[in-house]
Image (cartoon, rainbow, N blue to C red; front, side):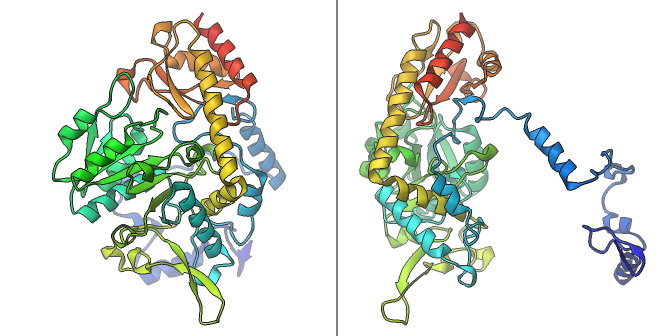
Length: 465
Protein backbone atom coordinates (compact mmCIF):
# COMPACT_ATOMS: atom_id res chain seq x y z
CA UNK A 1 0.00 0.00 0.00
CA UNK A 2 1.35 3.44 -0.84
CA UNK A 3 0.44 7.11 -0.86
CA UNK A 4 2.07 9.28 -3.54
CA UNK A 5 4.56 6.49 -4.10
CA UNK A 6 5.72 6.24 -0.51
CA UNK A 7 5.60 3.05 1.61
CA UNK A 8 2.70 3.10 4.08
CA UNK A 9 1.79 0.62 6.83
CA UNK A 10 -1.80 -0.67 6.48
CA UNK A 11 -2.60 -0.37 10.21
CA UNK A 12 -0.36 2.46 11.50
CA UNK A 13 -1.53 6.02 10.77
CA UNK A 14 0.99 8.57 9.46
CA UNK A 15 3.60 5.93 8.73
CA UNK A 16 4.78 7.62 5.53
CA UNK A 17 8.20 9.12 6.30
CA UNK A 18 7.47 12.42 4.58
CA UNK A 19 4.28 12.82 6.62
CA UNK A 20 6.21 12.05 9.80
CA UNK A 21 8.91 14.59 8.90
CA UNK A 22 6.31 17.29 8.32
CA UNK A 23 4.65 16.56 11.69
CA UNK A 24 8.01 16.58 13.51
CA UNK A 25 8.88 19.90 11.89
CA UNK A 26 5.59 21.37 13.14
CA UNK A 27 6.45 20.15 16.66
CA UNK A 28 10.01 21.49 16.47
CA UNK A 29 11.55 18.00 16.78
CA UNK A 30 14.20 16.24 14.73
CA UNK A 31 13.17 12.56 15.16
CA UNK A 32 10.53 10.28 16.60
CA UNK A 33 12.94 9.45 19.42
CA UNK A 34 12.74 13.08 20.56
CA UNK A 35 9.09 12.40 21.54
CA UNK A 36 10.38 10.09 24.27
CA UNK A 37 13.51 11.96 25.33
CA UNK A 38 12.49 11.88 29.00
CA UNK A 39 12.58 8.06 29.11
CA UNK A 40 16.00 6.77 30.31
CA UNK A 41 17.98 5.02 27.58
CA UNK A 42 18.31 1.81 29.63
CA UNK A 43 14.53 1.40 29.48
CA UNK A 44 14.36 1.71 25.69
CA UNK A 45 14.38 -1.30 23.36
CA UNK A 46 17.33 -0.87 20.98
CA UNK A 47 16.80 -3.97 18.88
CA UNK A 48 14.01 -5.46 16.81
CA UNK A 49 11.37 -7.53 18.56
CA UNK A 50 12.00 -11.27 18.38
CA UNK A 51 8.73 -12.23 16.70
CA UNK A 52 8.09 -14.74 13.92
CA UNK A 53 7.31 -13.81 10.35
CA UNK A 54 3.72 -12.87 9.58
CA UNK A 55 1.33 -15.55 8.37
CA UNK A 56 0.72 -15.70 4.66
CA UNK A 57 -3.06 -15.68 4.92
CA UNK A 58 -5.97 -15.19 7.28
CA UNK A 59 -6.70 -18.92 7.06
CA UNK A 60 -3.20 -19.81 8.30
CA UNK A 61 -3.52 -17.36 11.19
CA UNK A 62 -6.94 -18.74 12.17
CA UNK A 63 -5.67 -22.31 12.06
CA UNK A 64 -2.68 -21.42 14.23
CA UNK A 65 -4.85 -19.68 16.86
CA UNK A 66 -7.32 -22.58 16.92
CA UNK A 67 -4.44 -25.01 17.53
CA UNK A 68 -3.34 -22.89 20.50
CA UNK A 69 -6.88 -22.73 21.87
CA UNK A 70 -7.22 -26.50 21.56
CA UNK A 71 -4.51 -26.85 24.21
CA UNK A 72 -6.77 -25.24 26.83
CA UNK A 73 -8.13 -27.45 29.57
CA UNK A 74 -11.66 -26.13 29.91
CA UNK A 75 -15.04 -27.00 31.34
CA UNK A 76 -16.27 -28.48 28.07
CA UNK A 77 -14.00 -31.49 28.41
CA UNK A 78 -13.20 -31.40 32.15
CA UNK A 79 -15.54 -31.70 35.13
CA UNK A 80 -15.34 -28.47 37.06
CA UNK A 81 -15.71 -27.97 40.83
CA UNK A 82 -14.19 -24.48 40.97
CA UNK A 83 -16.21 -21.48 42.10
CA UNK A 84 -15.08 -18.74 44.50
CA UNK A 85 -16.83 -15.89 42.70
CA UNK A 86 -17.16 -17.21 39.16
CA UNK A 87 -19.11 -20.46 38.91
CA UNK A 88 -20.47 -22.73 36.20
CA UNK A 89 -24.22 -22.55 35.72
CA UNK A 90 -26.61 -23.49 32.94
CA UNK A 91 -27.11 -20.65 30.45
CA UNK A 92 -30.45 -20.80 28.59
CA UNK A 93 -29.92 -20.38 24.84
CA UNK A 94 -32.23 -17.38 24.81
CA UNK A 95 -29.74 -15.41 26.92
CA UNK A 96 -27.07 -15.61 24.23
CA UNK A 97 -29.65 -15.04 21.50
CA UNK A 98 -30.88 -11.78 22.99
CA UNK A 99 -27.56 -10.34 24.18
CA UNK A 100 -26.09 -11.02 20.73
CA UNK A 101 -28.59 -8.74 19.00
CA UNK A 102 -27.03 -5.73 17.30
CA UNK A 103 -29.00 -3.15 19.26
CA UNK A 104 -27.73 -4.59 22.56
CA UNK A 105 -24.25 -5.90 21.75
CA UNK A 106 -22.15 -3.46 23.77
CA UNK A 107 -21.23 -3.04 27.42
CA UNK A 108 -22.17 0.63 27.13
CA UNK A 109 -25.25 1.89 28.97
CA UNK A 110 -26.01 4.09 25.96
CA UNK A 111 -27.60 7.48 25.40
CA UNK A 112 -30.98 8.49 24.04
CA UNK A 113 -29.56 9.06 20.56
CA UNK A 114 -28.48 5.41 20.25
CA UNK A 115 -31.01 3.73 22.52
CA UNK A 116 -32.71 1.16 20.22
CA UNK A 117 -34.60 -0.27 23.18
CA UNK A 118 -31.61 -0.65 25.50
CA UNK A 119 -33.05 1.74 28.10
CA UNK A 120 -36.28 -0.23 28.31
CA UNK A 121 -34.43 -3.56 28.45
CA UNK A 122 -32.32 -2.28 31.36
CA UNK A 123 -35.41 -0.88 33.09
CA UNK A 124 -37.01 -4.32 32.82
CA UNK A 125 -33.83 -5.90 34.23
CA UNK A 126 -33.88 -3.47 37.16
CA UNK A 127 -37.53 -4.29 37.82
CA UNK A 128 -36.94 -8.05 37.76
CA UNK A 129 -33.84 -7.77 39.94
CA UNK A 130 -35.69 -5.53 42.40
CA UNK A 131 -38.41 -8.17 42.67
CA UNK A 132 -35.80 -10.87 43.30
CA UNK A 133 -34.11 -8.96 46.14
CA UNK A 134 -37.43 -7.46 47.33
CA UNK A 135 -36.14 -3.90 47.11
CA UNK A 136 -37.21 -0.92 45.01
CA UNK A 137 -34.14 0.53 43.28
CA UNK A 138 -31.45 -1.34 41.32
CA UNK A 139 -28.64 0.22 39.30
CA UNK A 140 -27.34 -0.47 35.82
CA UNK A 141 -24.64 -3.10 36.56
CA UNK A 142 -21.15 -2.16 37.72
CA UNK A 143 -18.05 -3.93 36.41
CA UNK A 144 -18.20 -6.77 38.97
CA UNK A 145 -19.18 -7.79 42.51
CA UNK A 146 -16.01 -6.28 43.99
CA UNK A 147 -16.81 -2.85 42.57
CA UNK A 148 -20.46 -3.15 43.64
CA UNK A 149 -19.37 -4.00 47.20
CA UNK A 150 -16.82 -1.17 47.25
CA UNK A 151 -19.39 1.31 46.00
CA UNK A 152 -22.00 0.11 48.53
CA UNK A 153 -19.42 0.59 51.29
CA UNK A 154 -18.57 4.11 50.08
CA UNK A 155 -22.29 4.91 49.89
CA UNK A 156 -22.63 4.00 53.58
CA UNK A 157 -19.75 6.33 54.46
CA UNK A 158 -21.30 9.24 52.55
CA UNK A 159 -24.76 8.66 54.02
CA UNK A 160 -23.56 8.47 57.63
CA UNK A 161 -20.63 10.88 57.39
CA UNK A 162 -18.45 8.25 59.08
CA UNK A 163 -15.21 6.63 58.03
CA UNK A 164 -15.05 3.00 59.32
CA UNK A 165 -16.66 -0.10 57.81
CA UNK A 166 -16.46 -3.54 59.42
CA UNK A 167 -15.94 -6.50 57.08
CA UNK A 168 -15.42 -10.27 57.58
CA UNK A 169 -12.00 -11.86 57.86
CA UNK A 170 -13.32 -14.82 55.83
CA UNK A 171 -13.81 -13.07 52.50
CA UNK A 172 -12.04 -13.22 49.16
CA UNK A 173 -8.64 -11.60 49.48
CA UNK A 174 -8.84 -10.43 45.87
CA UNK A 175 -12.18 -8.76 46.55
CA UNK A 176 -10.82 -7.23 49.74
CA UNK A 177 -7.90 -5.71 47.84
CA UNK A 178 -10.25 -4.23 45.22
CA UNK A 179 -12.45 -2.77 47.96
CA UNK A 180 -9.43 -1.42 49.83
CA UNK A 181 -8.02 0.15 46.68
CA UNK A 182 -11.40 1.68 45.85
CA UNK A 183 -12.09 2.99 49.36
CA UNK A 184 -8.65 4.35 50.30
CA UNK A 185 -8.20 6.96 51.75
CA UNK A 186 -11.82 7.84 52.57
CA UNK A 187 -12.91 4.60 54.25
CA UNK A 188 -11.07 2.56 56.86
CA UNK A 189 -11.76 -1.20 56.58
CA UNK A 190 -11.70 -3.16 59.85
CA UNK A 191 -11.68 -6.97 59.84
CA UNK A 192 -14.02 -8.93 62.11
CA UNK A 193 -13.11 -12.42 63.32
CA UNK A 194 -15.10 -15.62 62.92
CA UNK A 195 -16.25 -18.55 65.02
CA UNK A 196 -13.84 -21.40 64.33
CA UNK A 197 -16.44 -24.19 64.35
CA UNK A 198 -18.98 -22.52 62.07
CA UNK A 199 -17.18 -19.78 60.15
CA UNK A 200 -19.93 -17.35 61.18
CA UNK A 201 -19.08 -13.77 62.09
CA UNK A 202 -17.92 -13.51 65.71
CA UNK A 203 -20.62 -11.29 67.23
CA UNK A 204 -18.56 -10.50 70.35
CA UNK A 205 -15.66 -9.31 68.18
CA UNK A 206 -18.12 -7.37 66.03
CA UNK A 207 -19.64 -5.58 69.04
CA UNK A 208 -16.19 -4.72 70.39
CA UNK A 209 -15.22 -3.03 67.11
CA UNK A 210 -18.39 -1.04 66.48
CA UNK A 211 -17.91 2.64 67.35
CA UNK A 212 -19.30 6.09 66.62
CA UNK A 213 -17.04 6.07 63.55
CA UNK A 214 -18.68 2.95 62.08
CA UNK A 215 -20.48 3.79 58.84
CA UNK A 216 -21.56 0.26 58.05
CA UNK A 217 -21.17 -3.47 58.55
CA UNK A 218 -20.59 -5.54 55.42
CA UNK A 219 -21.04 -9.30 55.20
CA UNK A 220 -21.92 -11.85 52.53
CA UNK A 221 -24.75 -14.37 52.61
CA UNK A 222 -24.01 -17.01 51.44
CA UNK A 223 -20.47 -16.22 52.52
CA UNK A 224 -17.40 -16.39 50.29
CA UNK A 225 -16.78 -19.90 51.68
CA UNK A 226 -20.36 -21.00 51.09
CA UNK A 227 -21.76 -21.18 54.60
CA UNK A 228 -25.00 -19.34 55.36
CA UNK A 229 -24.69 -16.45 57.81
CA UNK A 230 -27.61 -17.34 60.11
CA UNK A 231 -27.01 -14.32 62.36
CA UNK A 232 -27.90 -11.83 59.66
CA UNK A 233 -30.66 -10.15 61.67
CA UNK A 234 -28.45 -9.86 64.75
CA UNK A 235 -25.69 -8.28 62.67
CA UNK A 236 -28.13 -5.78 61.15
CA UNK A 237 -29.53 -5.01 64.61
CA UNK A 238 -26.02 -4.23 65.88
CA UNK A 239 -25.48 -1.91 62.93
CA UNK A 240 -28.80 -0.10 63.30
CA UNK A 241 -28.47 0.31 67.06
CA UNK A 242 -25.22 2.15 66.36
CA UNK A 243 -26.71 4.32 63.60
CA UNK A 244 -24.73 2.33 61.01
CA UNK A 245 -25.83 0.75 57.75
CA UNK A 246 -26.19 -2.99 57.10
CA UNK A 247 -24.65 -3.97 53.76
CA UNK A 248 -25.14 -7.51 52.48
CA UNK A 249 -23.44 -9.15 49.51
CA UNK A 250 -25.52 -11.95 48.02
CA UNK A 251 -25.43 -14.64 45.34
CA UNK A 252 -28.70 -13.90 43.50
CA UNK A 253 -29.21 -17.48 42.36
CA UNK A 254 -29.69 -18.41 46.02
CA UNK A 255 -32.74 -16.15 46.39
CA UNK A 256 -35.20 -18.72 45.05
CA UNK A 257 -34.68 -20.65 48.31
CA UNK A 258 -33.14 -18.13 50.73
CA UNK A 259 -34.76 -15.05 52.24
CA UNK A 260 -33.69 -11.80 50.58
CA UNK A 261 -31.33 -9.74 52.79
CA UNK A 262 -33.94 -7.04 53.41
CA UNK A 263 -35.83 -9.58 55.54
CA UNK A 264 -32.93 -9.63 57.99
CA UNK A 265 -32.30 -5.91 58.05
CA UNK A 266 -30.14 -5.08 55.03
CA UNK A 267 -30.15 -1.43 53.95
CA UNK A 268 -27.97 -1.96 50.88
CA UNK A 269 -27.73 -5.22 48.94
CA UNK A 270 -25.03 -5.92 46.37
CA UNK A 271 -23.81 -8.99 44.54
CA UNK A 272 -22.58 -10.77 41.43
CA UNK A 273 -24.82 -11.26 38.38
CA UNK A 274 -22.66 -13.91 36.69
CA UNK A 275 -24.81 -16.88 37.83
CA UNK A 276 -27.82 -15.33 36.05
CA UNK A 277 -27.23 -16.41 32.46
CA UNK A 278 -23.56 -15.58 31.96
CA UNK A 279 -20.83 -17.94 30.79
CA UNK A 280 -17.56 -17.89 32.72
CA UNK A 281 -15.60 -16.66 29.67
CA UNK A 282 -12.14 -17.27 31.15
CA UNK A 283 -12.75 -14.75 33.93
CA UNK A 284 -15.06 -12.43 31.98
CA UNK A 285 -18.82 -12.31 32.20
CA UNK A 286 -18.73 -10.56 35.58
CA UNK A 287 -21.17 -7.84 36.61
CA UNK A 288 -22.17 -6.34 39.95
CA UNK A 289 -25.48 -4.94 41.15
CA UNK A 290 -26.53 -2.64 44.00
CA UNK A 291 -30.05 -2.38 45.42
CA UNK A 292 -31.78 -0.19 48.02
CA UNK A 293 -35.26 0.96 48.92
CA UNK A 294 -36.62 4.09 47.21
CA UNK A 295 -35.27 6.41 49.87
CA UNK A 296 -33.77 9.64 48.56
CA UNK A 297 -30.82 9.61 50.95
CA UNK A 298 -29.80 6.21 49.51
CA UNK A 299 -30.78 6.75 45.87
CA UNK A 300 -28.86 10.01 45.58
CA UNK A 301 -25.68 8.25 46.69
CA UNK A 302 -25.72 5.75 43.81
CA UNK A 303 -22.88 6.85 41.53
CA UNK A 304 -24.02 4.54 38.73
CA UNK A 305 -26.88 4.97 36.30
CA UNK A 306 -30.48 4.13 37.11
CA UNK A 307 -33.12 4.01 34.38
CA UNK A 308 -36.72 4.95 35.09
CA UNK A 309 -40.01 5.21 33.19
CA UNK A 310 -41.97 8.44 32.70
CA UNK A 311 -44.84 9.74 30.52
CA UNK A 312 -43.91 11.85 27.48
CA UNK A 313 -45.72 14.88 26.07
CA UNK A 314 -47.69 12.45 23.91
CA UNK A 315 -50.73 11.19 25.81
CA UNK A 316 -50.47 7.48 26.66
CA UNK A 317 -46.81 7.28 25.62
CA UNK A 318 -43.98 6.41 27.99
CA UNK A 319 -40.21 6.69 27.68
CA UNK A 320 -37.21 5.36 29.56
CA UNK A 321 -34.22 7.35 30.72
CA UNK A 322 -31.79 8.35 33.46
CA UNK A 323 -33.07 9.08 36.97
CA UNK A 324 -31.32 11.99 38.75
CA UNK A 325 -28.59 12.14 36.12
CA UNK A 326 -26.63 14.75 38.09
CA UNK A 327 -25.71 12.06 40.64
CA UNK A 328 -23.34 10.48 38.15
CA UNK A 329 -19.92 11.48 36.91
CA UNK A 330 -21.51 11.69 33.46
CA UNK A 331 -24.01 14.36 34.45
CA UNK A 332 -21.93 16.25 37.03
CA UNK A 333 -18.56 17.97 36.84
CA UNK A 334 -16.37 14.88 36.99
CA UNK A 335 -13.91 16.18 39.53
CA UNK A 336 -16.82 16.90 41.91
CA UNK A 337 -18.71 13.64 41.39
CA UNK A 338 -19.26 11.24 44.31
CA UNK A 339 -17.41 8.50 42.41
CA UNK A 340 -16.30 8.08 38.84
CA UNK A 341 -18.21 5.37 37.01
CA UNK A 342 -17.15 4.67 33.44
CA UNK A 343 -18.50 2.17 30.97
CA UNK A 344 -20.73 -0.26 32.81
CA UNK A 345 -21.54 -3.87 32.06
CA UNK A 346 -25.00 -3.00 30.74
CA UNK A 347 -25.06 -5.98 28.39
CA UNK A 348 -24.89 -8.34 31.35
CA UNK A 349 -27.80 -6.52 32.98
CA UNK A 350 -29.90 -7.24 29.90
CA UNK A 351 -28.70 -10.85 30.00
CA UNK A 352 -29.63 -11.23 33.67
CA UNK A 353 -33.03 -9.73 32.88
CA UNK A 354 -33.59 -12.33 30.17
CA UNK A 355 -32.54 -15.10 32.56
CA UNK A 356 -34.88 -13.93 35.33
CA UNK A 357 -37.79 -13.50 32.92
CA UNK A 358 -37.16 -17.00 31.53
CA UNK A 359 -36.87 -18.69 34.92
CA UNK A 360 -39.64 -16.92 36.79
CA UNK A 361 -40.20 -17.41 40.55
CA UNK A 362 -40.81 -21.14 40.20
CA UNK A 363 -37.70 -21.66 38.08
CA UNK A 364 -35.54 -19.77 40.58
CA UNK A 365 -36.93 -21.92 43.38
CA UNK A 366 -36.22 -25.12 41.44
CA UNK A 367 -32.65 -24.18 40.53
CA UNK A 368 -31.95 -23.18 44.14
CA UNK A 369 -33.33 -26.45 45.48
CA UNK A 370 -31.36 -28.43 42.90
CA UNK A 371 -28.11 -26.70 43.88
CA UNK A 372 -28.71 -27.33 47.58
CA UNK A 373 -29.53 -31.01 47.02
CA UNK A 374 -26.56 -31.71 44.76
CA UNK A 375 -24.03 -29.80 46.86
CA UNK A 376 -25.30 -31.54 50.01
CA UNK A 377 -24.98 -34.95 48.34
CA UNK A 378 -21.44 -34.12 47.22
CA UNK A 379 -20.36 -33.00 50.70
CA UNK A 380 -21.80 -36.11 52.38
CA UNK A 381 -20.16 -38.50 49.91
CA UNK A 382 -16.80 -36.75 49.97
CA UNK A 383 -16.59 -36.67 53.77
CA UNK A 384 -17.08 -40.44 53.86
CA UNK A 385 -13.52 -40.69 52.47
CA UNK A 386 -10.99 -41.28 55.23
CA UNK A 387 -8.98 -38.15 56.01
CA UNK A 388 -11.40 -35.69 54.34
CA UNK A 389 -13.57 -33.50 56.56
CA UNK A 390 -16.03 -30.65 56.06
CA UNK A 391 -14.37 -27.73 57.79
CA UNK A 392 -17.37 -25.75 59.05
CA UNK A 393 -20.40 -27.10 60.88
CA UNK A 394 -22.85 -24.79 59.13
CA UNK A 395 -25.55 -24.89 56.50
CA UNK A 396 -24.20 -23.91 53.10
CA UNK A 397 -25.30 -23.01 49.60
CA UNK A 398 -23.44 -24.15 46.48
CA UNK A 399 -19.96 -24.10 48.01
CA UNK A 400 -18.35 -25.80 50.98
CA UNK A 401 -14.85 -26.18 52.43
CA UNK A 402 -13.12 -29.56 52.59
CA UNK A 403 -10.12 -30.05 54.87
CA UNK A 404 -7.48 -32.43 53.45
CA UNK A 405 -4.96 -31.93 56.27
CA UNK A 406 -5.34 -35.50 57.58
CA UNK A 407 -4.69 -37.08 54.17
CA UNK A 408 -0.98 -36.24 54.33
CA UNK A 409 -1.21 -34.47 50.96
CA UNK A 410 -1.43 -30.81 50.08
CA UNK A 411 -4.36 -29.41 48.13
CA UNK A 412 -1.90 -28.48 45.41
CA UNK A 413 -0.81 -32.12 45.06
CA UNK A 414 -4.40 -33.36 45.12
CA UNK A 415 -5.55 -30.86 42.50
CA UNK A 416 -2.65 -31.79 40.24
CA UNK A 417 -3.67 -35.46 40.40
CA UNK A 418 -7.33 -34.56 39.83
CA UNK A 419 -6.31 -32.58 36.75
CA UNK A 420 -4.67 -35.73 35.37
CA UNK A 421 -8.11 -37.36 35.72
CA UNK A 422 -9.82 -34.50 33.79
CA UNK A 423 -11.26 -32.89 36.92
CA UNK A 424 -10.82 -29.34 38.21
CA UNK A 425 -10.66 -29.66 41.99
CA UNK A 426 -11.74 -27.02 44.50
CA UNK A 427 -9.92 -23.72 45.01
CA UNK A 428 -6.82 -24.10 47.17
CA UNK A 429 -7.36 -21.98 50.31
CA UNK A 430 -4.04 -22.83 51.99
CA UNK A 431 -2.36 -19.61 50.86
CA UNK A 432 -5.33 -17.27 51.22
CA UNK A 433 -6.25 -18.57 54.70
CA UNK A 434 -3.22 -20.22 56.29
CA UNK A 435 -5.10 -20.94 59.54
CA UNK A 436 -7.52 -23.20 57.64
CA UNK A 437 -4.78 -25.70 56.87
CA UNK A 438 -4.86 -27.76 53.68
CA UNK A 439 -8.40 -26.78 52.74
CA UNK A 440 -10.16 -26.32 49.42
CA UNK A 441 -13.40 -24.61 48.40
CA UNK A 442 -15.62 -26.91 46.31
CA UNK A 443 -18.50 -25.65 44.18
CA UNK A 444 -21.45 -27.77 43.05
CA UNK A 445 -24.27 -26.28 40.95
CA UNK A 446 -27.25 -27.42 38.91
CA UNK A 447 -24.98 -28.44 36.00
CA UNK A 448 -23.34 -31.25 37.97
CA UNK A 449 -24.82 -34.71 37.52
CA UNK A 450 -24.72 -37.49 40.08
CA UNK A 451 -22.23 -39.19 37.77
CA UNK A 452 -19.96 -36.10 37.88
CA UNK A 453 -19.99 -36.10 41.67
CA UNK A 454 -19.43 -39.85 41.90
CA UNK A 455 -16.43 -39.54 39.55
CA UNK A 456 -14.94 -36.92 41.88
CA UNK A 457 -15.53 -39.16 44.91
CA UNK A 458 -13.89 -42.14 43.20
CA UNK A 459 -10.94 -40.03 42.02
CA UNK A 460 -10.30 -38.62 45.50
CA UNK A 461 -10.54 -42.07 47.05
CA UNK A 462 -7.75 -43.24 44.73
CA UNK A 463 -5.65 -40.12 45.30
CA UNK A 464 -5.69 -40.06 49.11
CA UNK A 465 -5.61 -43.86 49.61
